[in-house]
Length: 407
Image (cartoon, rainbow, N blue to C red; front, top):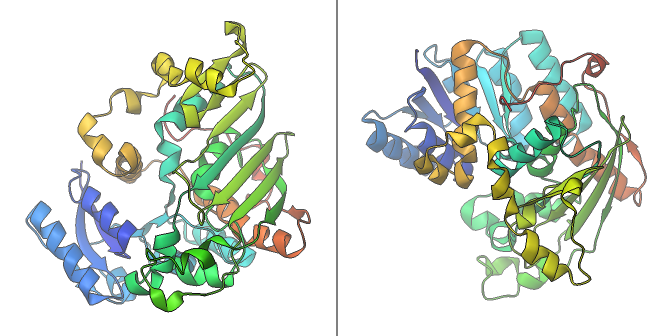
């Protein structure tokens, strides 16, 4: 099958990682790379040349890349604020568009994204790698087989100590810094929300109706700014608008609820805290466990005993994993985030090659990205409820509930 000729826009940490994975994939050929900074262009081109034997073209203006008729698809891994305008320009240029994740800045941006895709008909995929996570897909498979019963609640988090990354924003030319100085919101909801939304059939028979968000005080980054580990001493004492912990509670049309937590500026270990609660069982990512009611759950007063009993028992349910994980090449688990990045990119390229609908579409992107500006509104109003728009214009009622992979 013909290789997909790809252009990359954005070559920071994420763009560099994705391009290194794509350079080794038989499904794709990197034709051109683009970044505002020449050193990033050169570094990426050198790396791709070493892996493939052919250096891609380089440029600093993505409009130049979009004029290249040889390019079939574009992967956007630029700063958050560039996501929507660049994606719209890519779709208008007729380039199949794959957009990296991040929250939107306004509700209007989400409508503009949807309008551009509907008007142009250009295929669009939202690159939410966590939708391809092993535990997330195992949980979804168990739900589809009825083993969790009726789903009542799902929880997820982006728990990641990013204090050095945020404070190193000037040094490393990273977009997070300005966002944390000026905004107070659930700024990165899609890693946890994406898999939950697909599990709950959001935009496909179900929808998110409203949310409330609350923010804690902002103390973690300011204190860390005085720490010797701060990569940019010029930021010592800098004040930040972004609360250290953001809680968001979402109500869905079918009566289920979703809780999200943003937790990136205090000491902690990494976790997405993916949790599914149903009438017949639950899935708990943090201890890699599946608990089923019909197995006679044993209850302990000391929760540590429960953890010890059920820790990693999800391995006993491996028969329910989707085929893409059963067939996973162990070498590919080193290709970014335990293999999620590879699976996501492979499914994108295969959809392009086969002319299939994109696994994660424009309506998913808009519904998940809009949580950021809506949470900002809710926090500013002391946790007031905010309505979540329906970007499908009512089509969620009749859209078939499909999964991103065969379960």
